[in-house]
Length: 381
Picture 1 (cartoon, rainbow, N blue to C red):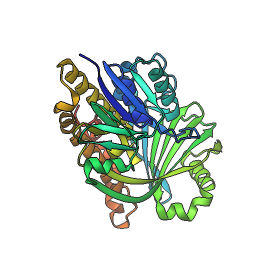
Picture 2: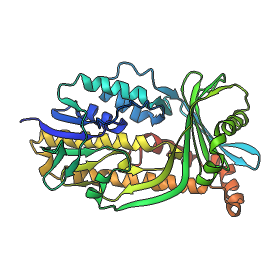
Picture 3: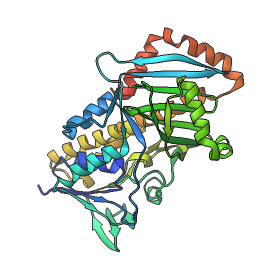
Picture 4: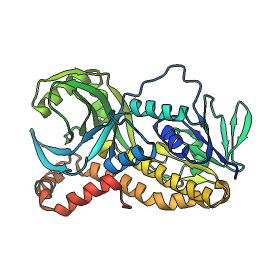
């Protein structure tokens, strides 16, 4: 059977990972990158993935070197009570790692190297001008190119999505901004921490020796008032949280708005949405790319099965099967994280009840065990 031909629009982390994994099958892939990107922007963000997802990437992509992944066995959770920082819950893994943290640019380099060696993957630095779901083609330089499967992995704001889902999704504006940066330090930090502060949740994610990144979610109002003074505020905050003056340098601060956006419809005919366009969730639990990897894993399983049966992607229920198998977990995680964020909001009328729950949470062992399993393998384990 002649290899089926698919296109992936978008060469971000989702697009590159999808291409590298599907490229192991007997499929021809065109990976489109917008050629208008004259300046190569270095992605200094960090991402955390679970043990099971790390093992999936490592084995599926045959990674011989994984030294750019920072392994964490522990995660400590804290909440702020007036001026006190209280450690209310710790996750520890004895026989395996709890999570792996990496800089996006490092994994992208590895994925680009893998893709460059695959004869069935073609990187096309041209802008896709339009997509047509009725006939299954994309338009590039005013030319129609037909595919058996078209995958959109172009972030959360593309106009292309409205042609697939008609704008229908579960949406919520948090009126929050995520602040991210890299910190150089002389402390002995080796594991991740999550602090639920009165201004908003702040995560510390070590990604190599003497370096960690932070993700701090604050209200739009707080960000706008303090935008010009964020480095000074962050330096003072970290010294207090870590009880240390060993912060050497705070890198360039970047920010992005936080919204909940869970698509109701994943596909139309032979066009599928993947990545942030499918589910944009709050960064509080660091589960975004974990969901993406489980989506890619399921898609790879279905494309392989469909090909082995000698069926065409565009003439089967493959994408419907993908939707039915992934929608529940994606929505449950998105809405569950939304509830978690709401629980830790600084609401005076709820403070006393929240303190009672948090101070006694360690007595509920099943909650801790279930949380660890869900974080590692998702709802459908």
